[in-house]
Structure formats: C-alpha cells, structure tokens
Length: 318
Image (cartoon, rainbow, N blue to C red):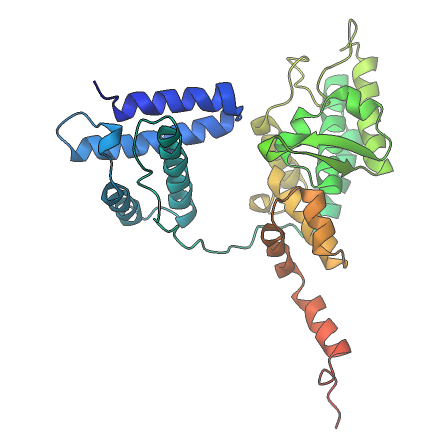
C-alpha cells in the first residue's frame, strides 16, 4: 500500500534530526510548514493523500492559498523551500518519480531594513548595564547583572547570533585570547573576534559565580548559564526578556532591542565606520555577500559624502 503524505512527512522529520543533524528549532519549523500543507490537502481531498499523487498544480494552488491568507512573502518562501526539500527526499528514496516543486519559482522576497539601534542607543544600553551592576543589592542580583552586561557587550562586540553565544562553552572563553570558534548555521564553524573589554566583563561574571559558590563541584559547561539550572545555558527567551527590561530601564524604545538587533548593530556600525563588506560577511558567517549587503542601508550619508568628495561632478563650483 502506498505511503500516505502524513506518514512520509513523519519519516522525513525523523531523518532531519537523526541524519541531517538539524537543530530542534529548525525541525520544528519544518514540521509546522509541512503539516500546514498536509492540512490544506486534507481539507481539499476526500480520500487519504498519497505522496506520489501530489502534482505541481497542487503546490501552485497551495501557494495561491497562502497568498490569499495574506501570509508574508518570506513565510511562503520558507514553506515552499520545506516542500521542495521534502519531495526531494522522497525522490531520492524512490518513493516518487519526480519532485512536484521543480520549476516552481520562488516568490520575490521584499527587501527589508533590519531594526538597528544607533551607536548612541548602544552606549546608553551599555552604560545602563554598568549601572545595574553597580546598584545591585544582593549577590544574586549582582550575578544576573554581570551576566547580562557580559552578554550584551559580547553580542554587540562580536556579531554572534544569540544561538551561537548560548552554545559557547565556558572552557573556550576561559582560554580565549582574541578569538574563539563558534558553530553557526549549517554547522559551519568560524572564528569570532573578542575585545579585551568583553573578556573582562565575562571574567567578572565568572568570578561572581565563584564567589557565590555556584560552581563548587565543577565549572559550568556553558559560558552563560541560567541561575536555577547551572548545568544548562540561559534560554533565548530569558535573555531576550532581560534585554527588553534593560532597554526599558535605560529609557530606550524597547521595540528596537532584541538579541538579533545587537548583531545588526555590530554589522551596521562596522560598515558605517568604513569596514569592507567582505570582512563583515566573514565576521557574521554569511554564506553569500548578498545577505551582508543589507547593511549598506545604514550609511547613506557616508555614501553621499564619498560621491561628493571623489566624483568629478561632486563639487559644485559657482
């Protein structure tokens, strides 16, 4: 009996984790996208859906359905990408003759400007983090304040993704000089530069934990741990919540601040100060330079000055 679409999706998701080694976050995204397509097909068919019966027209109708629901173009692109990889898997397994997603063009993605805090905003945020350390009224509050200060400065100074930061091992930072290795998307490893101030803030956070005897038996495995579970890293949600609270205390617009906005600020402020895109691409771990080019939006004034200064027609003479 031919396998149903639902059973094939379940097998594909198991393969993603067991063999492809994707993260839990990524596998959950695939699951959501593929089961949305399954629900769509079940709502439009009376019989059990067989994977081999899916044709290009079904995919095209699904894209129209998603568009009619006013889904963001990037969401539709992601769902089509998930379907393409799923059917490619079935094709390689010999379960279907051809991939029904072939020759279906991706929708054109809107280019959007990332929400990027200004250099002044970052200065205010970092100064507020310092004040929180100085004004902490208990050992526990001091530990949390030093941890937040170290994380904020490390993200902004290095351009790491928050997932990369939270997966950094304490041993790597303990022996860090100027660089550490981090593992990013696609399990690709790259070097990340760390400045002296960042390492000092991290060391202060570690010493606070030692003073509180948090690590009596053994040092932490992860660099930044949750206070209540010292053997596990701080969660993305926990850090994001603390960052928003810090921005609120600083009197800043909290919508501008997320863990990823600090990565945007790192790249934007580098390009504003004249860093070349190839270097920024390498520091961010982008696979393609086109991804990095989004950060050129932050420097219109500098680009205008460049044209005025260097182009023959840039200077107007009376």
